[in-house]
Image 1: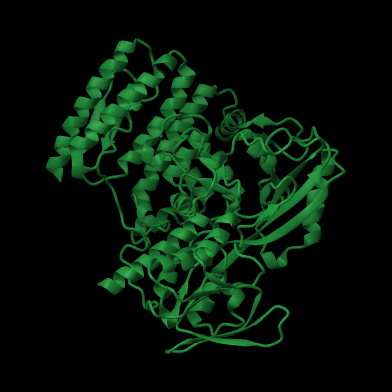
Image 2 (image 1 turned 45 degrees about the vertical axis):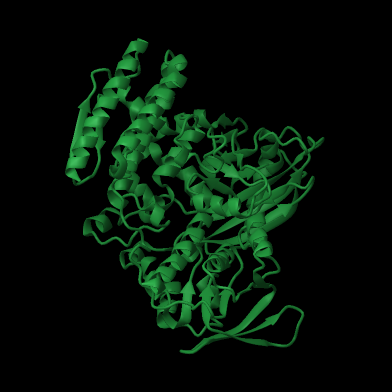
Amino acid sequence: VRLQELLLGVSVLNSCSNCIYELFELGTPLPNIEKGAVLKMREDNVHFVLHVVIAGLLLWLAFIPCLRVKDITQEVEFYQNEARDWLEQVKGDLGDAAQAVKITVAASALQTVANGVGDERPGAFTHLRLHGGPKKSDKIAIIGAGPAGVSMAYALSKAGYTNVRLLEETNRVGGKSLSFEHKYGVKHEMGTSYMSLDYEVVQELLDEMHYPHSADKVAGHLMYDSDSSTEGQEFSDWLNDEIRQELGKPKMSNTGVAMRLLKDAVRYIRHHRRLFGNYEKHGFLPAKPSNPAFRTELNCTIGAWLESHNLRSLSPLFKLAYTLQGFGFLQNTPAIYGFMWVTPKLLIGFAEQLNTRKHLPDDMSGPDTTDKQDRSLTVLREGFEWLWKTIVERKKLDVVLNVHLKSIDRTQSNVTVKYTIEDRMETSTEHFDFLIIAAPLGNLLKVLDSTPEETNVVSKLSSSTFVTTLFDYKDTSFRERAVETWFNNIDPKFPFKIWSVRDHLKLQRENGESKFPTPDEGSTQVAYQFSDSNFLNVSEEVVLKEFESHFQKHGLTDVNVVKRFIWHYFDRFSQGSINDGFPWKILDMQGSKRTWYTGSWTNFEAVNAVVSYNNHLVHAWVKQQES
């Protein structure tokens, strides 16, 4: 391996020297970004250091090191050609130093991500041995028909399981993926909303179901300081100001801000690779940490980790990419959750959203590979609920709705489920061979013959409350963008203040959809409110008061609430529980007492996390059976 890496280094140096010569011939100076670049093929192996006299030039070729040892020659030729193509496309813009900075920001981030490719590490499922699982002939009960339940049933069907029944408490399929249709046939997302570059497993499902549209990009984000602000800022201008404030340097130039953001983004990605390696293809959940140094470094909150590593410039991005999605405040949430969500690919996606990179390698192009620009954050025109309903319909999954569970009893030979269906008096009793819990475990303790391990898991979990409100208003001058955010409201001191609003009709029109008319008066939007309070302790009066107060401050009195949903959101473990081995201990329970567990509470409150978890759980069991 060392000999191959040495030969690889010679090839890369040759590629670099040839392309640097081309850049030199351009005769255009680049900003002084870096004095050198480090080609790091493996953390514990050979390091190649190439110092470049022309500062920053090598950053253009930053993705060349992304080479696999197994096929050196082919990879070198591919990236050499990619580098030359890129050079041709940017030659005309090199006279603008600011533009050069934008492109090199993403190039440098790409370098760091590429350097992690050779450092592949196992994920949580790589060496997993389950206590048990269903046989192909078993009758399987899945509790819950949300994304977790439906994607699990689909994964089982693809693996050859044909006798699966989903028992759903509500009158619909989809769980937190709820797409509410209102006016002109527009679907408004009241739960699951966005896709990012990390959502490959979800995109695969969309492709398999022949989703009829490309995903709509989210652009034109307008930012406000607080409720009383009437003048918003474009996202890039706002970000520059926020980073200046974080760093305490109000006079820092935009170029200086970009340079600092570049530096800190690269450092964060390097830390991410150092701590976790490149595990993503093995699932969303990283392997259980075994290194004491690892646990010591991450024994803190996300905010404290960023502060201790002098990465304060990333705090505004984390607040938007993490907290705004309902995953908790930076100063309160264990750092491991921040690393699980803000992956290198997600961070690069935000760089793309800021227009810092226009050209991506094909394997990182995001949901819509036909249009690689600004695809880092997208929404589904038909709504996320469409996906789960379509899977159920096309794969003819057996779903029973309006189920009220009476009891679940598990023995060594079977699982007995007793339930009633709404508007029916009689109790149904069904016998199954295996049980899969795809609903919040805490909701089932009253009917489940729970084990001490299950009760212990529930006692370790805490949750938040996310509120979405669909509303109409008549004032046509009130909103300028499809997405608008009040940044300073994102604070634990202000529970249920409105964080953000989104106009799905305007968003679709921004993406070229012309079938919807331009509203002659007012609009329809979704408002987002959040609190770290437990779902059961939430007062609807407080939610309504903050909602009305927000719009009154803007002189808007004709607001009509169409629908409001209050969600139990983001089940998570405390830092102490993480130190004790959660959520990985749930994997140790899989298969015990004829039961599997899935859903956001088992790893993370995101559709891609849940789908990935299910795919790898089924794959691990099938592989275990074969061996």
